[in-house]
Image 1 (cartoon, rainbow, N blue to C red):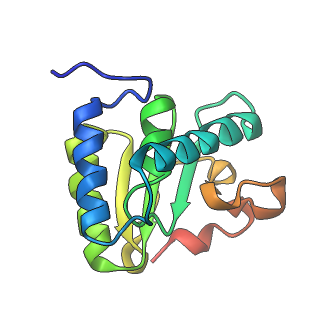
Image 2: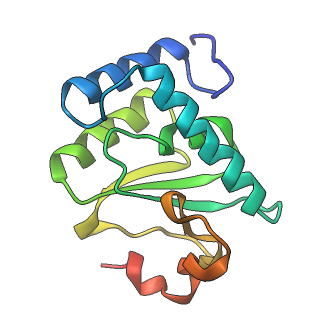
Length: 146
């Protein structure tokens, strides 16, 4: 198994995924390191919003996998859904989850078939919408059901 970096994902695996995502048009312009640093900011924000339990996090509009893959790698006690409305991107994210060996706690779903299993629905939060409880999806668990 390859060595892992601070994100818990082998650096060469994450690099390959992100280059592929950028080449496919799933990431914005700019150096990959800038995208990674931005994604790591979500780790800090998510941890600050956590109450110390194993969180279930929803990355809405996951695109090329950022920030979701970085959060999943850096926060091993988290469970993550990468939700993407574009089927082509959702399929890419499914392959990325497998390549990062995160399939035991991360899943990619297209918006049409998303369903996060498990109890404690109040722990679900969108990474791009992590603000005080105003955006908690626990009050609307039907958002994630088919």
